[in-house]
Image (tube, rainbow, N blue to C red; front, side, top):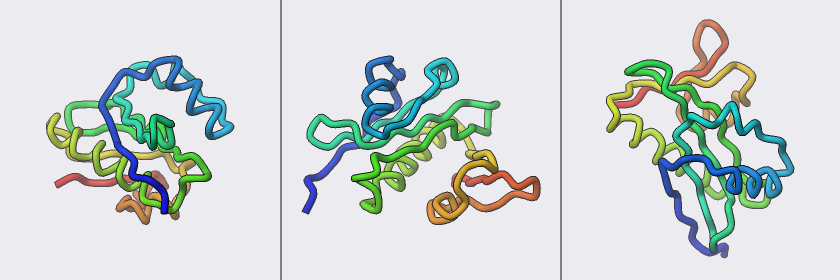
Length: 127
């Protein structure tokens, strides 16, 4: 059974964190696009296994910029826990909803409580 992991945030996204996650997930992440985001990370034994980035659109809405989990750590609830912590933080900021672009994977977002909007994007209401 895998060891427990912790979810931390919000925090500034440091270049070293971004590089660590890009290496772990074999992905190229855009540091400039994520520079103003509230980032939440999941770590297991000091190793980064997941990342969530939210950006404030206005006083009540945020955009999901990034949600990723190390492929070796998937299907263990990491994405769900990252989103739970991100939702709680956004609710404390007065937020009511988080939107994700239609290019995001629909099945995972639906499993995480997002609903399809009329324009094809995804939204999750808080509260």
